[in-house]
Image (tube, rainbow, N blue to C red; front, side):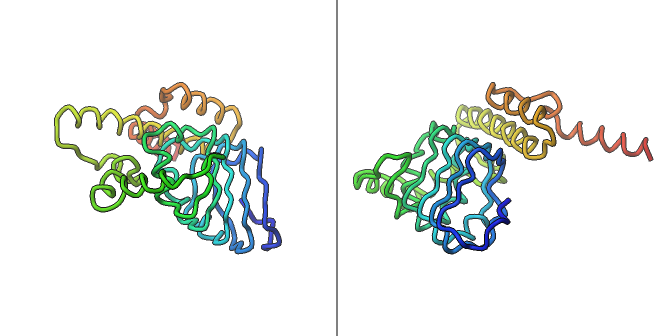
Length: 220
């Protein structure tokens, strides 16, 4: 949480701070550069970005942003000129670079590579209009909409089902990491996330919640 400054600085460095989520920034109109390397950030609060209207440089190297949906709050930073997401899983996603360039029109450098005019034109042609908006929704659906997406063909539907299940599992693990209270628990959950499996206690959250409620009743 950022409660230590009263808008006195143009640059703040939070490198190596074990941060799990980018949130709780007070209004900091003077802040231009934010450095967040080597943390565990997997979520970004839209209100945090809205509090930084003058932000031109954001360095998120080596964090836990894995899907394009994780980046949606960043697109409020309309003055952003430099962005680094190196060593984040999201860079492996299809359309990653074009998607970011399209939503950040003033961006000059992405992952320390200059944004070219050709990339701008390609991004615009890819995501403009109704067809582009549909593609954007497919590759970066709002978090609450993952399970609601539908596809036409049976084969595509089955593949989408697999993707949604995987995305849902990732969300469960990320949420568990955010709620974890010990480093041992965080490390175990992060290992599961990296290895691509879901821990037993998260495999059936409805059953787990039912068991917890039953335990609460017995204790009472």
